[in-house]
Length: 192
Image (cartoon, rainbow, N blue to C red; front, side, top):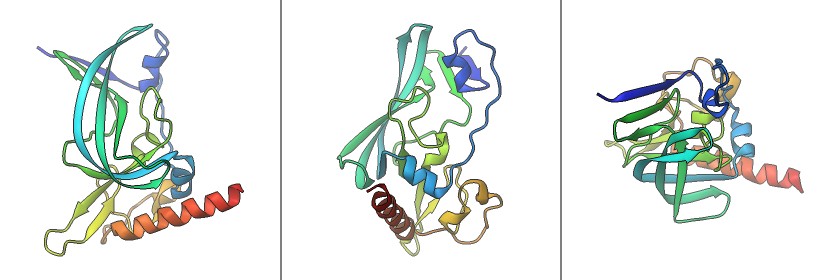
């Protein structure tokens, strides 16, 4: 029988024997996503594997997700990126981190990477730094959905203002990339 470890919060694991407490990830606004990201890329998941690591508090399971990078929108260009997420299954042990994004081989996403060495999730805003790309087989139009598959019409609906996403058509991939690039340019001009 598979042993299953369920976390109320990933941070409780980092605190060792400390008492677990509920946490909430505040959804970042579009501006926060772009500004806090060190790297933003369009990529396809090509592999996913879990492994057990030893740390000072004992064993820990992480999952390494490798992406073929199709386009870099912010940061240093690369052909591939491998990101480490807490959780996964090794042998008969499963570590589940509530709310952790699950990437499958063949997925295509826009990924906002904040701190690639974060012990829990390298994405900005935990799962909020993942946007799924889908393609309409009839029209060939590529559109973007939130990490949990919801439609959104524009970047103003992200973050705290993003309550109650419209059920209408969703933002096109080209429009989303264009808004990201505009924000990157704006932020770099302000930083000078």
